[in-house]
Amino acid sequence: MLPNTGKLAGCTVFITGASRGIGKAIALKAAKDGANIVIAAKTAQAHPKLPGTIYTAAEEIKAAGGKALPCIVDVRDEEQISSAVEKAVEKFGGIDILVNNASAISLTNTLETPTKKVDLMMNVNTRGTYLTSKACIPYLRKSKIAHILNLSPPLNLNPLWFKQHCAYTIAKYGMSMCVLGMAEEFKGEIAVNALWPKTGHPLLPDFFLDEQPAIVTKKADSYGAVPELKEEKMQLPPKPRSGAVEETFRIVKDSLSDDVVKATQAIYQFELSGEDGGTWFLDLKSKGGNVGYGEPSDQADVVMSMSTDDFVKMFSGKLKPTMAFMSGKLKIKGNMALAIKLEKLMNQMNSKL
Image (cartoon, rainbow, N blue to C red; front, side, top):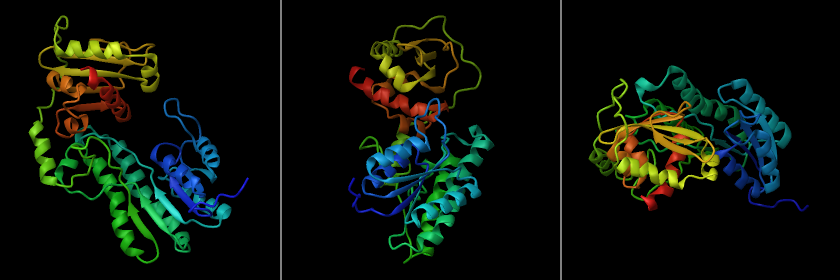
């Protein structure tokens, strides 16, 4: 086999959280360009719900044309970071690029964020990025193409991005502040930058992105945050009345398939206030899927609270989930990754609702 002569041929890229997601995507692109990839991630054994380990990622990287070194690294553990850096230097002779991708997320407000999750986000996002950078910098200084790239947002101080998930924003901004500080500290030696993917609807910027902050704030305010639902259990009507909510669930049910269930693997519970409200569920774990009125037979992975009007608007594409969440119209408890999966299903429903 001919050697890979891509633009990163012979360069060593150290990537945290590279066993799946954006981290692995960056690794595969760099591998196609001939890079040596250090996969610094926690997942050594297959997760029952999340595909990919450091070893399966290594095989994909080799198949893409690069060389791979899988290392078990929890970025909260300084010894594991140091060990991986030493192994990388021993195997590949140095480190040219560091990608700080590992991150923890909990989009919950202050009172709903357990201390354990606060510590996790601060230690993985801010502290982990700082310590990994610190460990790699002595070797990056020896490289002619030294780069540090953090997957973190612009430092946007619009209160909109703080009020619904203060702890997460602080933790991610810590990564961005590492960019700001280290770029100046190591100017002329190491290029330090941030990358924050811009996705979503053209009229709806992704988290932390607002080219015109006043307009974004006004847009969020125009949705009007609804009062928080009380913790007491809602009084359910004896049976659901016919209406837009029931029709929405009927269309959703008609659209379900084994493929949708297999791709989602989650149970969603909806606490709806207003006419036709009450508790509804969407079961995307059982064979073929199911919807219904009342609580699901198994515990829900995600609980969403909103008004019936907003529920219908959200499934029909008239209200974007991100803006509903940021404005307080949508409350989410449970697995946020699975909540995001539901948004994809909503997009499929839009043409039918």
